[in-house]
Amino acid sequence: MEKSKKNPKHIAIIMDGNGRWAKARELPRIEGHRAGAKTVKEIVTAAREMGIKYLTLYAFSSENWKRPKPEVNGLFRLLIEYCENELDTMLKNGISFNVIGEWGKLPNNTRKVLRNTMGETEKGKKMRLTLALNYSARKEILIAVSNILKDNVKRISEKGFIKRLFTYDMPDPDLIIRTSGELRLSNFLLWQAAYSEFFFTKTLWPDFSKDEFSKIIEDFAGRERRYGGI
Image (cartoon, rainbow, N blue to C red; front, side):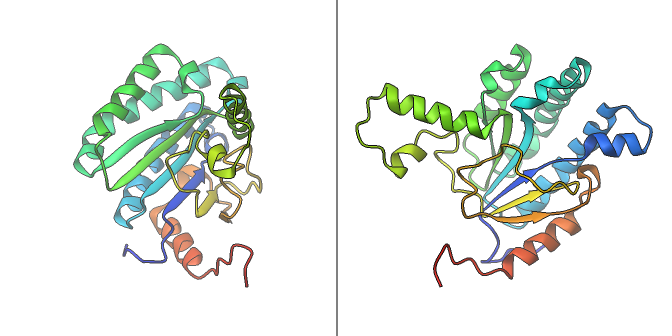
């Protein structure tokens, strides 16, 4: 896949459909998540090859704690496996690993692996891979407001507010993709999505491919972004 000046700088993806993928095949839900992890690897590679600087993946929302405990624990095991298995690839390809959300509330062993992966890859300059873990956009906004109050800021500016978001050191997403046919943001990057382009596909996340990803990027390149202007 070729790099293009019209490629988005930052792509965010709501990875949806793992459970339905598994159900359609009469498999345990965790097998859908396992297949989804393989897709993550494929799409990260595709994004890097296309010169995408920032890729943010919605991996675990604050609402996902409501799922059965075995499924949640399985998700964290897959996360640890991904970080451990892909560390060398990230280092080799200049990918820095990042996490947003209240990830300090994740299990100790998961936090340890995440922290290690971030530390090992912090010098990567070619692409930043961010996972949103225990993430809630509404909570992110509330935390930012709370920190403004704690800092006794008398006059709130947009710039000052942005500095207190989890994504303070990233550009807003140019493109947000959601798989599985759902047509909503599900509490993801609500502030940052103000001028994002959206693409919704019916493809379940484990079936999402490099080819479809490339076609979505081509669609984005053909859009005219006016940001409220003419």
